[in-house]
Length: 253
Image 1 (spheres, helix red, strand yellow):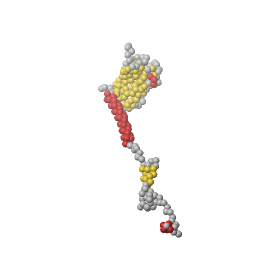
Image 2: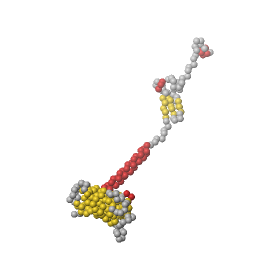
Image 3: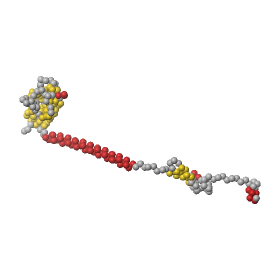
Image 4: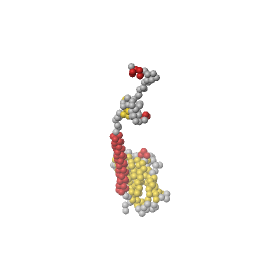
């Protein structure tokens, strides 16, 4: 009865206390609890700290599941191996090119050293193997030593289908001053008149012939000389003559 009377004392209204939420207040009943928030990629843990300001009381730690690492070492090693392989191939190609250049230079040196008498040599290809009368090649060569005597050769490349045993050509030699020094008709034998055997060097159906045309020639002036060759056969065009050339060489003393 005493307790009932104290509770019902006039002027004293007992108000219910509001419930304290966990994490709000210093002595909340749920102050030590942790709320686990599960997500699709990990777990977030919220922890209450009593001695920190309110805006720092909620801290979250996000734990992300470990993803498999992509190791780039293998990729780097592969790309490095590819670069090394490409570099090696480039070095080999440069080595092959250098070797070819050296071999060509050696061949030219040997060719020059094997023919020390040669002063000039050039060959002109006849279009379609048909040598016309108005097609008269001109060969220009330089003479520096006027005390030397020279031999001049005519080069002919012909096909075995050539109809004649011989070839008539006329030369015209012009000096550095433009004056004509000599002009002469030459007969070159391309095949043996009795047997029909081709003369010169060759294989299959193509042969090369070099014939001495002018011997012991003296050039009195230094400078550029010009030698023109004209075919003097009865056929125009003259078939199966593939190339015509001139060679100037020092005469042996």
